[in-house]
Amino acid sequence: MTVRLLGVSADDYVPHPIHGGNRIWTETNCYADLWIEILHSLGLDPVPVAVCAFGARFDGAQWTFLKFKPEDLFALYGIEVDEMNVWRRPIEHIEDNAAAGMLSTVEVDSFWLPDAAGTGYREAHGKTTIVPVLVDRDRDELQYFHNSGCHRLTGADFRGVFGLDEPGPPAWPPYVEQIRFRPGATLNVDAFDTALRRHLRARPRGNPVRDLAARVVADVEWLGAAGVDGFHRWSFGVLRQCGATAELAADVCAYMQNAGYPDAGRAIDDFRTVADGAKAVQFRMARAARGRAVDPTEQLDAMADAWQRAMTVVAAAAGQAVPSRVSGPA
Image (cartoon, rainbow, N blue to C red; front, side, top):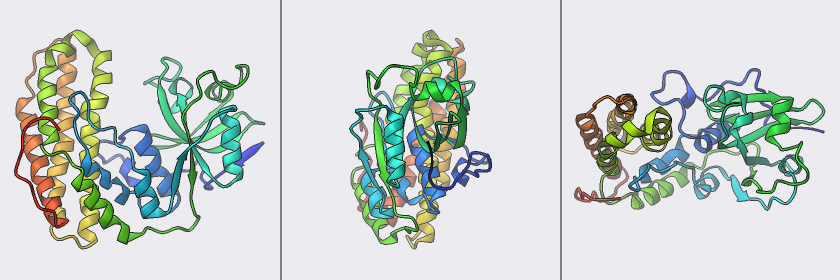
């Protein structure tokens, strides 16, 4: 059985510019990145749905794992996302969804994903999310969105990623979603303002980058003991998510400027300052994980100030009252 959706191929797929080589952060996280490419492949602009970046926060241990909200996907593009009851092999649900014209998100083990070479492929087990766009059981071939592009796997990787050599359904079913979309749908520009105001109302009262900065400084000594492996796991949830979120926020500000929000473009440079700063601090903290003394305080302070300025501009552009600066946890 062979099923294909969206008419894309791993052979000639061109990712959205958000995943281009000129970006500060070429990837955000598996879920946000695959949605960027789904929307791109449907001919839709993915930038407006990144408006949730304005509500990001630091919870004391990690930055928000940015996920485009189902309510925003529905309001902006008419796309419905619902969790599935997984009671058979995941591949069977994916095939049924495709036959009904739906895409599927599915959690898989990155151990079987060739595009994860160097970070886990055939080396370590880890949870990640993909969206299959072609499933060919006869050839043991899967084409799928993951991270910044469209990829292919075959043979043993195909059987492994779907657990086909294991008896019966998986003992611990993966999380699977159905994605219902209308071919030819367009962006509902009027829904953007509602989403923008909702996420601004939900933003943390204080400055999440300043809260993150305090934790980063406190973790310098811990990283020296955690080593390089601990650093990579730590940095993904702290600095990468913060930096990539800020870069997406800059993209949304550019969209807002073009959509008629006065002066929203003035926040672009400050959000990119945060994105650049997070990358620079990440390099410094990698040295800390190798036992070297580092002090990222100055860079972190500059990031926090830039975030505050940018959010003040965005709130003003959206017609929001700008609260006074409040310190403390998000």
